[in-house]
Image (tube, rainbow, N blue to C red; front, side):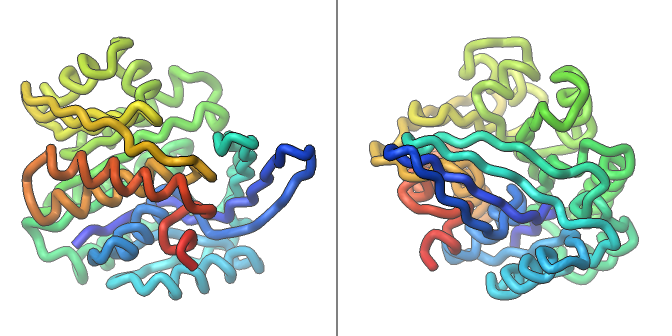
Length: 298
Protein backbone atom coordinates (compact mmCIF):
# COMPACT_ATOMS: atom_id res chain seq x y z
CA UNK A 1 0.00 0.00 0.00
CA UNK A 2 1.13 3.56 -0.67
CA UNK A 3 0.57 6.32 1.87
CA UNK A 4 0.82 9.95 0.72
CA UNK A 5 1.60 12.70 3.23
CA UNK A 6 1.49 16.42 2.57
CA UNK A 7 -0.48 19.12 0.85
CA UNK A 8 -4.12 19.03 -0.05
CA UNK A 9 -5.21 22.41 -1.36
CA UNK A 10 -7.62 24.15 -3.69
CA UNK A 11 -6.50 24.69 -7.28
CA UNK A 12 -8.03 27.83 -8.77
CA UNK A 13 -7.41 27.36 -12.46
CA UNK A 14 -7.44 30.22 -14.94
CA UNK A 15 -7.49 28.98 -18.52
CA UNK A 16 -6.55 31.35 -21.32
CA UNK A 17 -8.34 30.52 -24.57
CA UNK A 18 -7.25 31.25 -28.13
CA UNK A 19 -10.07 33.80 -28.51
CA UNK A 20 -8.70 35.82 -25.59
CA UNK A 21 -11.37 34.79 -23.08
CA UNK A 22 -10.60 33.28 -19.68
CA UNK A 23 -12.28 30.43 -17.82
CA UNK A 24 -11.92 29.89 -14.07
CA UNK A 25 -12.57 26.69 -12.13
CA UNK A 26 -11.99 25.35 -8.61
CA UNK A 27 -10.97 21.81 -7.70
CA UNK A 28 -9.06 19.80 -5.12
CA UNK A 29 -5.33 19.52 -5.72
CA UNK A 30 -1.90 19.29 -4.12
CA UNK A 31 0.82 16.99 -5.44
CA UNK A 32 0.69 14.19 -2.81
CA UNK A 33 -3.11 14.31 -2.79
CA UNK A 34 -3.09 13.95 -6.59
CA UNK A 35 -0.67 11.02 -6.35
CA UNK A 36 -3.00 9.25 -3.90
CA UNK A 37 -6.02 9.91 -6.14
CA UNK A 38 -4.16 8.66 -9.20
CA UNK A 39 -3.10 5.44 -7.45
CA UNK A 40 -6.78 4.77 -6.74
CA UNK A 41 -7.67 5.57 -10.35
CA UNK A 42 -5.04 3.07 -11.49
CA UNK A 43 -6.50 0.33 -9.32
CA UNK A 44 -4.07 0.48 -6.39
CA UNK A 45 -4.46 0.90 -2.65
CA UNK A 46 -3.66 4.35 -1.27
CA UNK A 47 -3.86 6.31 1.96
CA UNK A 48 -3.67 10.06 2.46
CA UNK A 49 -2.64 12.21 5.45
CA UNK A 50 -2.95 15.99 5.37
CA UNK A 51 -4.56 19.14 6.75
CA UNK A 52 -7.27 21.52 5.53
CA UNK A 53 -8.71 24.75 6.86
CA UNK A 54 -12.03 25.00 8.71
CA UNK A 55 -13.43 27.32 6.02
CA UNK A 56 -15.80 26.43 3.15
CA UNK A 57 -12.91 25.59 0.85
CA UNK A 58 -11.57 23.17 3.46
CA UNK A 59 -14.98 21.50 3.69
CA UNK A 60 -14.97 21.08 -0.09
CA UNK A 61 -11.56 19.43 0.08
CA UNK A 62 -12.72 17.02 2.79
CA UNK A 63 -15.70 16.00 0.69
CA UNK A 64 -13.46 15.45 -2.35
CA UNK A 65 -11.02 13.36 -0.28
CA UNK A 66 -13.84 11.21 1.05
CA UNK A 67 -15.17 10.67 -2.48
CA UNK A 68 -11.79 9.34 -3.60
CA UNK A 69 -12.34 6.17 -1.58
CA UNK A 70 -8.90 6.02 0.02
CA UNK A 71 -8.05 2.87 1.95
CA UNK A 72 -6.85 5.07 4.84
CA UNK A 73 -7.57 8.78 5.33
CA UNK A 74 -6.65 11.32 8.00
CA UNK A 75 -7.42 15.00 7.53
CA UNK A 76 -6.57 17.41 10.32
CA UNK A 77 -8.86 20.46 10.59
CA UNK A 78 -6.62 23.47 11.01
CA UNK A 79 -7.63 26.82 12.42
CA UNK A 80 -5.76 28.41 9.52
CA UNK A 81 -7.12 29.31 6.10
CA UNK A 82 -7.03 26.59 3.45
CA UNK A 83 -4.00 26.71 1.16
CA UNK A 84 -4.71 27.89 -2.41
CA UNK A 85 -2.82 27.42 -5.67
CA UNK A 86 -3.59 29.68 -8.60
CA UNK A 87 -2.91 27.73 -11.79
CA UNK A 88 -2.72 29.63 -15.07
CA UNK A 89 -2.97 27.48 -18.19
CA UNK A 90 -1.88 28.76 -21.59
CA UNK A 91 -3.69 27.93 -24.84
CA UNK A 92 -1.07 25.20 -25.42
CA UNK A 93 -1.80 23.51 -22.09
CA UNK A 94 1.33 24.66 -20.19
CA UNK A 95 0.77 25.89 -16.63
CA UNK A 96 2.30 28.20 -14.06
CA UNK A 97 1.60 28.35 -10.31
CA UNK A 98 1.15 31.05 -7.70
CA UNK A 99 0.41 30.03 -4.10
CA UNK A 100 -1.47 31.56 -1.20
CA UNK A 101 0.48 29.63 1.39
CA UNK A 102 1.56 32.10 4.08
CA UNK A 103 0.35 30.71 7.41
CA UNK A 104 -2.16 28.40 5.74
CA UNK A 105 -3.37 24.90 6.56
CA UNK A 106 -1.29 22.44 4.55
CA UNK A 107 1.77 22.41 6.82
CA UNK A 108 -0.24 22.50 10.08
CA UNK A 109 0.57 18.84 10.72
CA UNK A 110 0.98 16.91 13.97
CA UNK A 111 3.71 14.31 14.35
CA UNK A 112 1.59 12.52 16.99
CA UNK A 113 -1.23 12.22 14.45
CA UNK A 114 1.22 10.86 11.88
CA UNK A 115 2.53 8.27 14.34
CA UNK A 116 -1.02 7.09 15.01
CA UNK A 117 -1.89 7.02 11.29
CA UNK A 118 1.27 5.15 10.30
CA UNK A 119 1.12 2.74 13.25
CA UNK A 120 -2.45 1.78 12.40
CA UNK A 121 -1.86 1.37 8.68
CA UNK A 122 1.74 0.65 7.67
CA UNK A 123 2.32 -3.09 7.64
CA UNK A 124 6.04 -2.95 6.88
CA UNK A 125 8.02 -4.26 3.93
CA UNK A 126 6.32 -3.50 0.63
CA UNK A 127 4.59 -0.35 1.86
CA UNK A 128 5.68 3.06 0.55
CA UNK A 129 5.27 6.36 2.38
CA UNK A 130 5.35 9.25 -0.08
CA UNK A 131 5.98 12.88 0.91
CA UNK A 132 5.06 16.10 -0.83
CA UNK A 133 7.30 19.15 -0.66
CA UNK A 134 5.07 22.17 0.02
CA UNK A 135 5.37 21.73 3.81
CA UNK A 136 9.15 22.18 3.56
CA UNK A 137 8.78 25.96 3.23
CA UNK A 138 8.35 26.28 7.02
CA UNK A 139 10.54 25.25 9.96
CA UNK A 140 7.64 23.31 11.48
CA UNK A 141 6.93 21.56 8.19
CA UNK A 142 10.56 20.50 7.75
CA UNK A 143 10.67 19.21 11.33
CA UNK A 144 7.46 17.26 10.81
CA UNK A 145 8.70 15.76 7.54
CA UNK A 146 12.02 14.66 9.03
CA UNK A 147 10.37 13.02 12.05
CA UNK A 148 7.57 11.39 10.05
CA UNK A 149 10.00 9.98 7.47
CA UNK A 150 12.20 8.55 10.24
CA UNK A 151 9.19 6.96 11.92
CA UNK A 152 7.87 5.53 8.64
CA UNK A 153 11.25 3.93 7.99
CA UNK A 154 11.21 2.43 11.49
CA UNK A 155 7.93 0.77 10.48
CA UNK A 156 9.71 -0.90 7.56
CA UNK A 157 8.32 1.32 4.79
CA UNK A 158 10.23 2.71 1.82
CA UNK A 159 10.34 6.53 1.68
CA UNK A 160 9.36 8.37 -1.49
CA UNK A 161 9.76 12.07 -2.26
CA UNK A 162 8.77 14.35 -5.14
CA UNK A 163 11.18 17.31 -5.02
CA UNK A 164 8.69 19.65 -6.74
CA UNK A 165 10.60 22.90 -6.14
CA UNK A 166 8.36 25.95 -5.75
CA UNK A 167 10.84 28.81 -5.94
CA UNK A 168 8.22 31.49 -5.34
CA UNK A 169 7.73 30.25 -1.77
CA UNK A 170 11.36 30.86 -0.81
CA UNK A 171 13.69 33.84 -0.61
CA UNK A 172 15.94 32.24 -3.22
CA UNK A 173 16.38 29.11 -5.30
CA UNK A 174 19.27 28.14 -3.01
CA UNK A 175 16.90 28.27 -0.01
CA UNK A 176 14.37 26.14 -1.88
CA UNK A 177 17.03 23.53 -2.64
CA UNK A 178 18.30 23.52 0.97
CA UNK A 179 14.75 22.90 2.20
CA UNK A 180 14.70 19.57 0.38
CA UNK A 181 17.90 18.27 2.00
CA UNK A 182 16.41 16.16 4.79
CA UNK A 183 13.75 14.40 2.74
CA UNK A 184 16.06 13.96 -0.22
CA UNK A 185 18.62 12.27 2.02
CA UNK A 186 15.99 10.11 3.73
CA UNK A 187 14.28 8.90 0.56
CA UNK A 188 14.61 5.59 -1.24
CA UNK A 189 12.62 6.73 -4.29
CA UNK A 190 12.91 10.25 -5.70
CA UNK A 191 11.26 12.11 -8.56
CA UNK A 192 12.61 15.32 -10.09
CA UNK A 193 12.00 17.31 -13.21
CA UNK A 194 14.89 17.90 -15.60
CA UNK A 195 15.29 21.44 -14.23
CA UNK A 196 15.21 20.29 -10.60
CA UNK A 197 17.80 17.58 -11.26
CA UNK A 198 20.14 20.16 -12.77
CA UNK A 199 19.67 22.59 -9.85
CA UNK A 200 20.23 19.98 -7.16
CA UNK A 201 23.17 18.15 -8.74
CA UNK A 202 24.76 21.03 -10.66
CA UNK A 203 24.77 18.75 -13.72
CA UNK A 204 22.87 19.95 -16.80
CA UNK A 205 22.63 16.57 -18.52
CA UNK A 206 19.58 14.77 -17.02
CA UNK A 207 21.01 11.30 -17.63
CA UNK A 208 24.19 12.12 -15.73
CA UNK A 209 22.22 13.91 -13.02
CA UNK A 210 19.97 10.87 -12.53
CA UNK A 211 22.98 8.55 -12.22
CA UNK A 212 24.65 10.97 -9.81
CA UNK A 213 21.67 10.84 -7.43
CA UNK A 214 21.19 7.10 -7.90
CA UNK A 215 24.79 6.53 -6.85
CA UNK A 216 23.75 7.25 -3.26
CA UNK A 217 21.54 4.15 -3.22
CA UNK A 218 18.31 5.72 -4.43
CA UNK A 219 15.89 4.84 -7.22
CA UNK A 220 15.63 8.09 -9.20
CA UNK A 221 13.16 9.25 -11.83
CA UNK A 222 13.83 12.39 -13.86
CA UNK A 223 10.95 13.63 -16.01
CA UNK A 224 11.64 15.49 -19.25
CA UNK A 225 8.13 16.66 -20.17
CA UNK A 226 7.37 15.96 -23.82
CA UNK A 227 10.78 14.28 -24.20
CA UNK A 228 10.01 11.36 -21.85
CA UNK A 229 11.82 10.34 -18.65
CA UNK A 230 14.82 8.55 -17.14
CA UNK A 231 14.94 5.97 -14.34
CA UNK A 232 18.20 5.19 -12.55
CA UNK A 233 19.35 2.85 -9.80
CA UNK A 234 23.00 2.27 -8.97
CA UNK A 235 24.83 2.37 -12.31
CA UNK A 236 21.75 1.20 -14.23
CA UNK A 237 19.72 3.74 -16.22
CA UNK A 238 16.73 3.42 -18.52
CA UNK A 239 15.02 5.91 -20.83
CA UNK A 240 11.42 5.97 -22.09
CA UNK A 241 10.15 8.44 -24.70
CA UNK A 242 6.92 10.30 -24.03
CA UNK A 243 3.69 8.98 -25.49
CA UNK A 244 2.74 11.29 -28.39
CA UNK A 245 -0.56 12.95 -27.43
CA UNK A 246 -2.40 16.23 -27.93
CA UNK A 247 -1.95 18.02 -24.60
CA UNK A 248 -5.06 19.64 -23.14
CA UNK A 249 -3.89 20.35 -19.58
CA UNK A 250 -0.46 19.44 -18.17
CA UNK A 251 -1.52 20.10 -14.55
CA UNK A 252 -0.86 16.98 -12.50
CA UNK A 253 0.97 15.10 -15.27
CA UNK A 254 4.02 14.58 -13.05
CA UNK A 255 1.77 13.35 -10.24
CA UNK A 256 0.11 10.83 -12.57
CA UNK A 257 3.57 9.73 -13.73
CA UNK A 258 4.81 9.18 -10.18
CA UNK A 259 1.59 7.49 -9.02
CA UNK A 260 2.04 4.85 -11.72
CA UNK A 261 5.74 4.52 -10.87
CA UNK A 262 5.07 3.97 -7.16
CA UNK A 263 2.24 1.54 -7.83
CA UNK A 264 4.48 -0.46 -10.15
CA UNK A 265 7.36 -0.48 -7.65
CA UNK A 266 5.00 -1.65 -4.90
CA UNK A 267 4.32 -4.72 -7.04
CA UNK A 268 7.67 -5.33 -8.71
CA UNK A 269 11.25 -4.07 -8.29
CA UNK A 270 11.70 -3.57 -12.06
CA UNK A 271 12.57 0.12 -12.68
CA UNK A 272 12.07 -0.17 -16.45
CA UNK A 273 8.55 -1.49 -15.93
CA UNK A 274 7.87 1.33 -13.48
CA UNK A 275 9.28 3.93 -15.88
CA UNK A 276 7.11 2.74 -18.76
CA UNK A 277 4.03 2.72 -16.54
CA UNK A 278 4.80 6.27 -15.45
CA UNK A 279 5.21 7.56 -18.98
CA UNK A 280 1.92 5.97 -20.05
CA UNK A 281 0.07 7.45 -17.07
CA UNK A 282 1.57 10.91 -17.58
CA UNK A 283 0.51 10.73 -21.23
CA UNK A 284 -3.07 10.01 -20.23
CA UNK A 285 -3.08 12.86 -17.70
CA UNK A 286 -2.24 15.61 -20.21
CA UNK A 287 -5.25 14.65 -22.37
CA UNK A 288 -7.65 15.26 -19.45
CA UNK A 289 -8.76 18.45 -17.74
CA UNK A 290 -8.21 18.41 -14.00
CA UNK A 291 -5.31 17.92 -11.62
CA UNK A 292 -5.67 14.14 -11.18
CA UNK A 293 -6.94 11.11 -13.03
CA UNK A 294 -10.00 10.63 -10.83
CA UNK A 295 -11.07 14.24 -11.41
CA UNK A 296 -10.33 13.99 -15.12
CA UNK A 297 -12.58 10.98 -15.51
CA UNK A 298 -15.41 12.41 -13.44
